[in-house]
Amino acid sequence: MGEQLIKKIGVLTSGGDSPGMNAAIRAVVRSANYYGLECVGIREGYNGLIEENFTKMGPRSVSNIINLGGTVLRSARSMEFKTKEGRQKAYNNCLKHNIEALVVIGGDGSFTGAKIFSEEFGIKVIGVPGTIDNDIFGTDNTIGYDTALNTAMEAIDKIRDTATSHNRVFFVEVMGRDAGFIALNSGIASGAVDILIPERKDSFEDLIISFEKAKKRGKNSSIVVVAEGDKLGNAYQLAERTKERFPDYDIRVSILGHIQRGGSPSCADRVLASRLGFGAVTGLLKGLTNVMAGIQSNQLVYTPIDDAIKKHNEINQDLLLISEVLAL
Ligand code: ADP
Image (cartoon, rainbow, N blue to C red; front, side, top):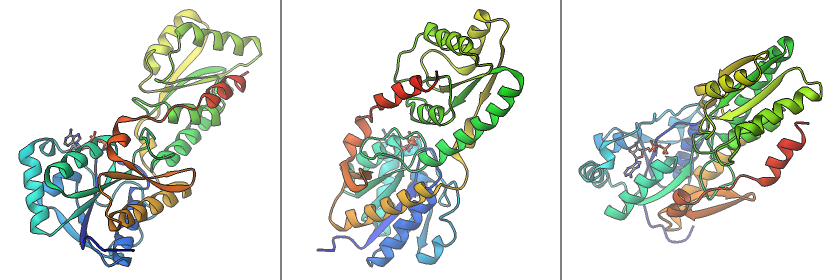
C-alpha cells in the first residue's frame, strides 16, 4: 500500500442514521485490521469524541452486524462539536489515544464538522456518505438510499391495494426535505400518477391536470407521491386543496416517516457500504484527507469534502419525463 502514514484511526457514525451504516463500520474495522491499523470505535457521533466514549474494535467486534439497520456505534447530533471548545476537547481525546485519522460516516452536516475539525487540528478525515436522501455530491448513491427506496416502494404497493379497492386518491409523503430522489424513484417504481419534488417547480394546476387526465382515461384510483420538502405544500395541505376542487374524491393521506430509515440494508447498500468503508481506509493509507469516498460509474472515487458538501447531484431529467409518460 505504499508508505504507511498512520497507525491508528477512529470511526464514528453521525447525524441521521441510515441502513447500511453497520456494514460500513464493519468494512472500516476489518479493512483497518487487514492493513495493520488499530481502530477505535467512537460512540454517539461527535459527542463520543468529546466525552471520550471510545471502544477498541477488532474484526470480531463487528461480527453479525452487516445485516442490521441503524448503527451499533449509535449516532447523535452534537451541539458542542459546533463550538471551538467542544472540538478542542475532541482533539485532546484524539491526542490522548493517538488517533491520527477519522472515518466519519454521515451526511453533509457531519462532513462539515469533519472538515472544520481537520482544518483546525490537522487530524486526517475521510467521509463515507451515509444518508437515505441521496443528496451528497461525489457518489451515485449514498448508503441507505436503496433500502429506503425499497421500503417506500413496498409501502406504496400496499397503499395501492387499498386505494384500488375503494376508488381512493392517496397522497403519500416520503422523506426528502431538500431532495426528491426517494420520491421520484419510488414514485416511478410504484406507478404514481404524479410526483412532487422540491427540485421542480410544479403548480397546483399541474397536479389538477394530472387528476383530470387520470379520470378521463378511466383510472379510478390514484397515488401521488410527495417529497416532504416539496414547495407546493405537505401532503395534508395538498389533500385539502384537492378536496376543494374535487369534492367527490375520497382522498387519504399517508406519511411514511421513519420506517424509511430503518430495516435490514438491501444487498446494494451492503455492497456499497463495504466498498466505501474499504475505500476510506485505503484512502487514508494513501495519505488522503478531507475527501469523501464514493462510487461513481462503478468506480471508487474520492471527492474533496468541500465539493461533497456544497455541490449537488442533479435530478435526472429523463426520469422526470419517464414519470410523466408512464403515468398516462
Ligand atoms: P447529517 O450528517 O445527517 O447531515 P447533521 O446536519 O445533524 O446530520 O450533522 C451532524 C453533526 O455534525 C452535528 O450534530 C454536529 O455535531 C456536526 N456539525 C454539523 N455542522 C457543523 C458545523 N458547522 N461545525 C461543526 N460541527 C458540525
